[in-house]
Image 1 (cartoon, rainbow, N blue to C red):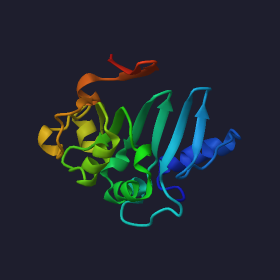
Image 2: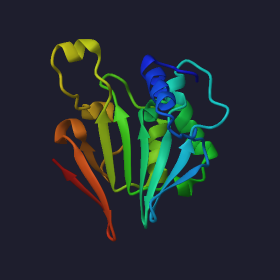
Image 3: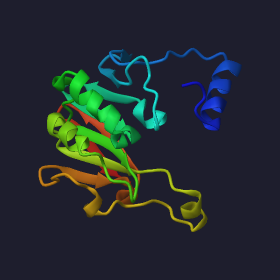
Length: 185
């Protein structure tokens, strides 16, 4: 997608003006972050999907690996049936396994049923749900963040610890020999 939003166009302009190096990531890429941490790009595929919700359907899904611990970062792409179907059919299930899975939810927007299948393959101990971007009306009312009602989470949550940043605030996540440590501010 070429400049799907004004914000993205400004981001690209800043890269150009500051002569910053960047690479376009696609499925299969691995980026080393220091000596012991890697970022595995699981989505999007190439060529990018053309459809009604290209931003979500082509959203970046990565797996952060630090030693024996991993974190699957789905973001808003967790709301894309197309992307979740793609993960389930195109990505080796071993790459979906993660101790922590993060995704974004929006009040009034149900998660696709495919998210439950992705979570089953991931086998996380912890799920972190961040609120979606607030609408202009919500911001005008002074709403700071939105907690998703349990009725909107359409999958069995009994085997996972679920943390909502709208309820807890900022989370600090660090890696140690024993796994991920998650602390709320």
